Length: 462
Image: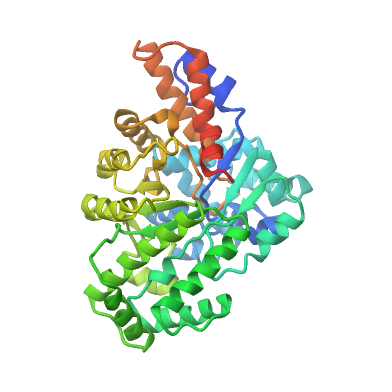
């Protein structure tokens, strides 16, 4: 994994080393904890920064026959690292093999392959560096040349750590992103009402009707806006866009607020209404809305009951996508209330679907207003990124693409931007060598720099 890793042509090497590599990182979607940035946390060992919360690695370890105790259980940090080192040689051709060694090389200067034979020395070398001030969270962010970070935050969040970071005058912008999924989670009345009580307290308002519910959310939306948020995010199986009336929604809300569970039809009506209302809020304040679509979550009931969500129990789903997505976007667009939008699909079968859908609602007001988001989750690997880039190139304007993100809980995951950039440059380099695009380094170099950073900076306009 030398300096020309993944770069198969001279053009690819020129594009990466002279253009892509120098660009800062605009990480507009991730799941890192802002408290750890505010406190400038220092991790005791490599397991804590690398394996805690990383469901990608847990899935691989389980597949390799590793007991849950060494993934999410009470094994020591060394034991967990040792089991990961045993697993890594079996990840050849899985993106985890590339990610692991990119992170070791980028942040720790380690070129060795992680295995049982090298585990102890790599453990000791990484841990020694992590004990130094140069490896605090903020310095790791600096080391990665990060310009902007957008976290993922619930509407009831106090944003206290974002405020603290800003007050410290940390040169990297760390901004909240609005993730209101719990405000739509009406499948269980008891859970929803507990959340409503928390929302009412945060907004300092009594929630006794649907209109007061929307008022409470709008107050929190304004609070997020005042604290630098310009970006929302929704994690959905698919867009929901059923028909409803205002009277029906008032009755549905009164029913669930009264403690009664909703019917399946009432659930989809309410969620359809909420997606529309959130879209209106985002447009009113000039935000960008993101939709992560297609995950079938928490498939193993046994492990979900034991461990909870976000532990590696999710897979690609095969939900209907085109009709509800079109109907939802059209509802907003009909009244000129469609915000800038980024759509991510988890099922690669939907690449061309998303690639054509975004073209339906481009309106000339903003370059690339509708975005086909980067390869996400199971698709943020070389093959998935290439397919997304090809679909976007064939059906839209790759040059207007806002590029990669980490979507990670780890501060070492910034190498995913490098992985993407190398892949992008290699694809363009191959096209040049094949005579399919001109060997115009000014044109292509500018294109690469824009996709890596400039487009996102201009598009999100933080």
